[in-house]
Length: 73
Figure 1 (cartoon, one colour):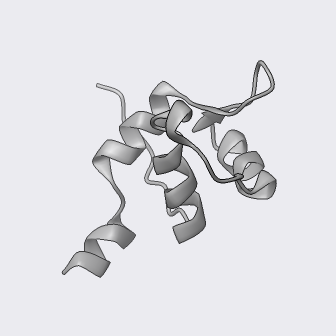
Figure 2 (tube, helix red, strand yellow):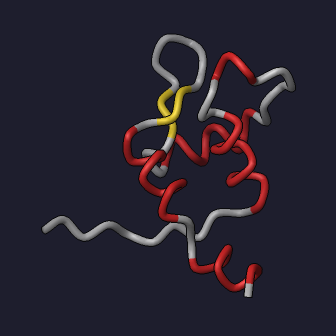
């Protein structure tokens, strides 16, 4: 079984990751620094010029994070 690391993302990173779920629906400009940080974590790919969420990014987004669970509680 593969153990995935927990990602402690900032609110801006979460919002950007959520916006990349449907790239055609992205109407607002994305923060380039946030995209670069997400790419460094392997959650976003910048191949081809435009950012796209990776499979790992989708898993992290679906699974959520401990920080999000703390906010919801």
